[in-house]
Image (cartoon, rainbow, N blue to C red; front, side, top):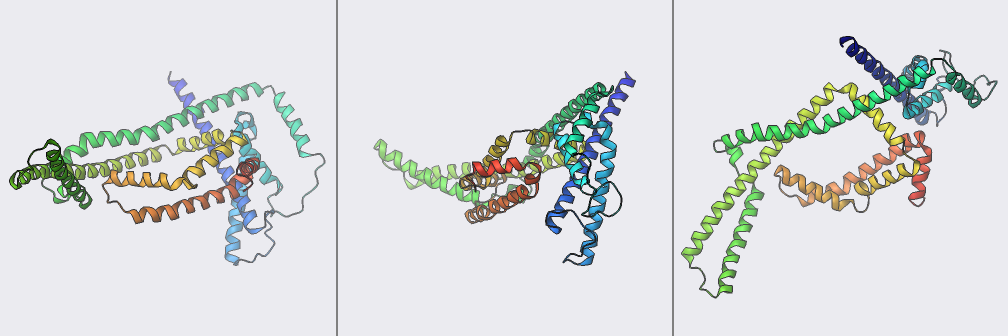
Length: 380
């Protein structure tokens, strides 16, 4: 039993290393593409050229380029024997790494624009290479190993996703019920900050007291009775004011409990992120596979739905409801001007970031999705 556990752990560690190396090389390939687009007008990097930027900046850029290119080359050499174990998304990532690396040849010298012509088309060589891998006696073992690795990745991703969701919720609820609420209720009468009623709660209580007085007068008129005398009205208003004062104090302490509970939930979420950094890397690959495994129309539909909800013409109402809920949850005063300013700026910034992501990342990874998105948006 112990040997089986150690073997399973070794396999999971090996699978995680493959995913981690592939993720690093993929990010390095994206970095090289970004440098090509930013400094060389979407052409291969040419270190011998003098750019119209400071020499120190160009030297730093070239150091980043060489380091990223070396990571891509090392990863290609290490993953060659594990190619059959990769899933669809990882195959696409590996293909991007190969495309980027092929632009700079196999030598360790500085890359140039000139390359030796190929004897046969690369696609034809890929067909023969695929046939060779299929006829390999160890191909079946590689496919089984790849299935096991993808299964382990799925289980790890689902487990860390559940932990990221459930741990903060459980920490918030348990800490609030078992620790925070008893302590706040215990020390609230002695600590002025905890027992102090917020100004907005006092205003709400005064408005409720005014409505209560109007209701008493209205009920007396409906029933045909004499209105309450000043003494009776004063007694009833005094009793109601005490009740409203207790309610306002309770809402104030509830807001403090919510804040402390949210802080505890944030600490729990941070702890899960720190302890599960390797699992989160696997989760990123799982999400990428799920997202980029969609069809082009499905990707475009999801993008349009997301943008219309958060940065579209109908988003201000949703942001208003969300911000008012946050204010009520934290016991903050209602600030109409802050909400209007937030709605006027944050969705615009979010839309700019999203368009930049489409231009720099999605346009390279899935250009057909960008074309479908433009068509679904009416060509805009």
